[in-house]
View 1 (spheres, protein in one colour):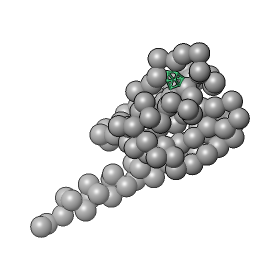
View 2: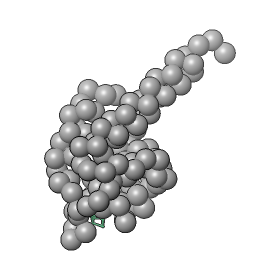
View 3: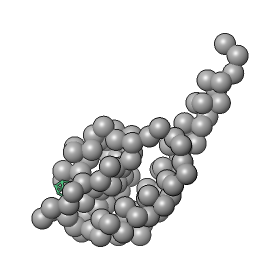
View 4: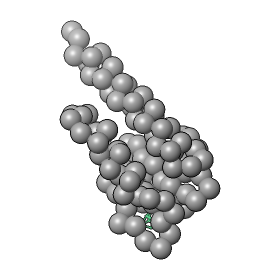
Length: 104
Ligand code: SF4
């Protein structure tokens, strides 16, 4: 999910969105991912997302279920930090799936 953008948008939301969509292409994990345009309202508006990022002029944040888990300065650093967190989340899902697939 992505915010519709508004006057509060402080980053190049569509560039971030493209990068995140490219990363998730072909991923079957049932996760909800949010790309939001501002740190003030982004985490709250996307609190149902398993993971999300929100950009800010000075710093951006990564959040999981509305809770901030990382802060990064600059759009590139924000995207890199987000990709790391996303990978951790995907790895966790795969591990849970593997554990759940074993004999009871
Ligand atoms: S998350 Fe921020 S930029 Fe996006 S629509 Fe909401 S208030 Fe506007």
